[in-house]
Image (cartoon, rainbow, N blue to C red; front, side, top):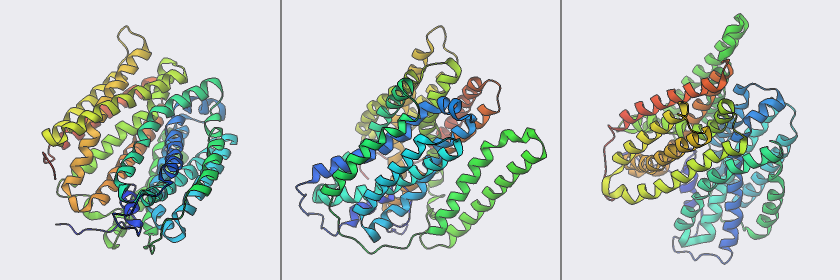
Length: 481
């Protein structure tokens, strides 16, 4: 049996478990009178973070035209946001313990607002990328602080409140593309960031008066070195992929690509070496391979590439290949999200009866079908209808596969649920970063970006199919565990 870990400087899902333990109130503590008002403030802030993550996907073409940037660099506005969140989530719980969750929550909202304002007035893609990274960091800090606040005010009902809290992300997936499409169509891509400002002001005032500081715990040490190494690996790898097209520009371009690749490899080696020696590393080595965990990690990378990567790339693909307007392109992601929500309800109902493996395989098969439909040209029907069907099929597959894969990973190591959950989210973000970086780099190097992206969707379908073959080897589990 693997040793049970504490909520250490893990990765995204660890703050959820940490938030539940962070209150000194016992499990039977009474819910507070203002709990629903506090919940509305915290969940609204999380919705703002989720909206900003998906709304920008509809504005990539507008960003290219307005800032004169290549598609490879505009793709960074999505991937660097995820990098910021990955790196900040392990710190959020620690800073909340040290300085107070209420203070961290309010500061994170303020930083997000400031970054949004600078995003709206930026004059270059480089400045926008830096500001998007800061937005991601603020969002990553906000999540564990907000969950700790919700867990505290709901007392013995914290389990239900936190479960309801997580439903905000699917809402962002549905509303974000629509919001982004409307704003880009009737206003400008800059409006996506400007509309955050009035909402942030309301949240700051409401949070200041409604939220009370939960009791603090003594903060544990943070694996700062591990987080820094992880950041270097991610940024160097993204830079290498983005600059692949420069290989044809001569020796200077080749040297630039080679240098960033060397940095990524060396940082990756140093990160693994550090993880083997550190008592509680940000990425625990024992949970990377063995006992089916290696297969699950591979599966999560592929799932993240398909699920999150599809969200980021589908609107750009629709605009590049078929000249679909941003609003209609954003609707594709809404169709996908609706399909995902509907099928996830079915998956949850069937998990104990059939186990996670059948749902996982059927869901991944549907994802493959949806990606193939997206890649091939429409057979005599309107592109909008064809892509909507493809997005719906992809969403249905994601809804079946997501709960099944979540359950499968936790079942493998039931004593380390928070750690496995954190790695699951981190590997999915890795997959999204790889998918977006590779696809935008290939598109930037092609004379026909829309066709290049269709080939990338087909390649992604092959990757998911290979991951499904790996998933077939994961032990199945029916009933409770």
